[in-house]
Length: 452
Image (cartoon, rainbow, N blue to C red; front, side, top):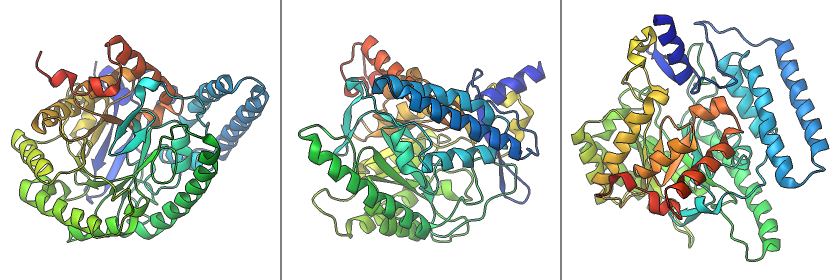
């Protein structure tokens, strides 16, 4: 029985563990039992062999070659073939050290070794938030591309928006292995990320200007630099004694490249960070960060929206305080939520659950969705909410939207499902909306919170 529970736990989530040295070790588990690249990770995960990496490269080469042959068919069919073909590569990642697999996935997206979505999104998924036009509400959460290395490739996969970071002012060393999300280059620092975003920003703007000149009156979905919306998640250094100064520095350095900014005050792995969610500290922080943003010179489009990312481990009073601050200071949005330090069933029955750290994946879904619904009610639907936590299907996304989210974000499920998961979720979400009798996402937002 214990073995079955342990295996189920591995299929549903990942957990980050804090060691005695106060560093973090993360164990990464699959979000779906049927996932082709589910990982069984020993406490000391072996590195993937050179032979295995060559095999993976050869397979990717075959896929590209096959794709060239398949390109003789129409574009939609070819695009569908490419996305489905990525499922063939997924099993090879299960042989890799999880950190190597993550690094390889980011590198592949950065080099354009991923399929590009050419098919239009279902029209029912189109929406506008903060004056930005989204082709769909499915985004990639912060943490996957911490250093903004693969923005173009990730947006090309068909996400409606991509959030990079968290970005801290100074570089931070990685943590002892095994780990999956916290890479050695985790904190390359704000200078390196700014240079990278600046280069990508210029390239995307150049490509967009040449494309739109021939597009005529066609509606363009995107932000400052082109198709797709780019969010930048700002964090503080672990050793920093002045959190506000860290966030202000992030605004001054990166906001010119961002379609929206996020104040991340909810990571369980940064000592003392969640204390900033209290009413007084949060109000002071948001006011100073807003002032830093507004004192900069902006064109007609104005400054980027400023969002706050909160934890799911909040009391009723905490939620009321955050809602009050968000309404009083006119915060542009809230992201709900980060990982949890709780251990909901059946996770609590697993021995690994005794470790300290953040839990994500399926076990987080109900907890984060309930917090999302509470916050929608407390803010009276006046603040755009992004639902994040445990989404692995179009139905999950639909439930988040009905609970109050206007946009949603993936992370763990994408890490395991790969590119093929994105069009699948979009198709399923469109079907859910149509079955529910909705003509747009706006109509479904907060449906479960409204009085019958």
